[in-house]
Image: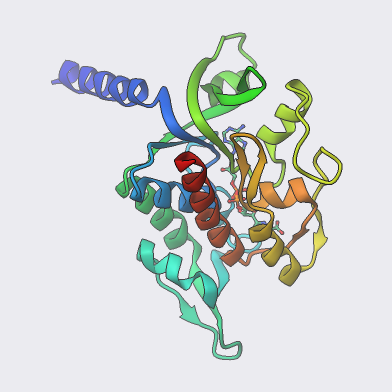
Length: 258
Ligand code: 48H
């Protein structure tokens, strides 16, 4: 029995990893915007894998606002939550705004992305991009414990037609691509403009506007997109993140069809 359990886990994981060493879309980070993008891409048959540094995907959703595990969304995003089966409650004093339990949101987004056919590799950190013939062509990944312990262990490579940076506030992947591959982004300066302070209404709108392709094959969603284009932050209101994920899926799908 012991041997059966161990060998089943090793061979099942190996099959999953080998199958995902070449994907249509590789997503970095498993926050809310990325999980929404993954679900909608997988729904239309796009082979999609998420690589998430932490053990638990979900990004900044779990902790709600200052560890009060509730968040707010606006009416525009209800359709997306319905697609995932996540419940909300309208705020009596603020029609058009809803609260939701962030543990239900995190677990619902993860479950929905997986059930649509996206794969999630947790405890894996993306440490570099593949850059061939002046094009982004995939990700360089390693185990998070290897990264955290500073072990000198070479990574493995995931080939992807499109890469989506869903790493949140630091835009880690776009940041490293501008430094290491010295790419010029499709922004006014060619570089990352940097996140602005709190201005919730503006930040919610700009998160969606700023969700786009910043370099051939390299897209950003969620707070990462906002950081790249210099949008404001918005605190624990998540409609913009969900709408950004849905827009990223649409843009990537269109770009794959071209
Ligand atoms: C693998 C990585 C790497 C890497 C990072 O921050 P997130 O929750 O992502 P978003 O943008 O979908 O959501 C943002 C939201 O949570 C938030 O912070 C808001 C609304 N803030 C407003 C405000 O005012 O502060 O998740 C990003 C995920 C995390 O799980 C990271 O662990 C992961 O990306 N990640 N995974 N390799 N190099 N870098």
